[in-house]
Length: 110
Image 1 (cartoon, rainbow, N blue to C red):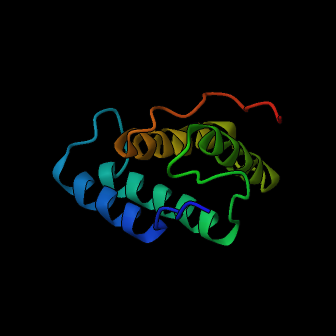
Image 2: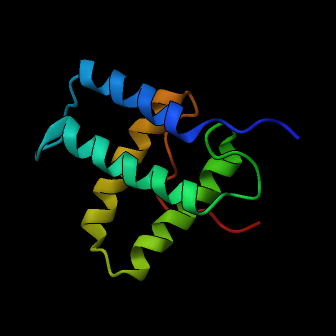
């Protein structure tokens, strides 16, 4: 079995990178907001390990985990505009990791 990426290490590298790179298009709190939302997503990944691959290394696993997180947010009646903002932050994280942008809509289950 392949070794999974360390969630804390990947988040730490992203947070360090984010501190040195301006976030365009983020109205409220800029990089601090992005870092907070990505930390929440990383907490979600830690508490809900993805069984179908490593969402920090594999695009298909990323898509499944992001879709599950989007559904998780909806369960708590998170407004659609807030989910969009959260997904934008998660998108920045995945672009940083080299996996590209996250799907803008839910991914169909396989």
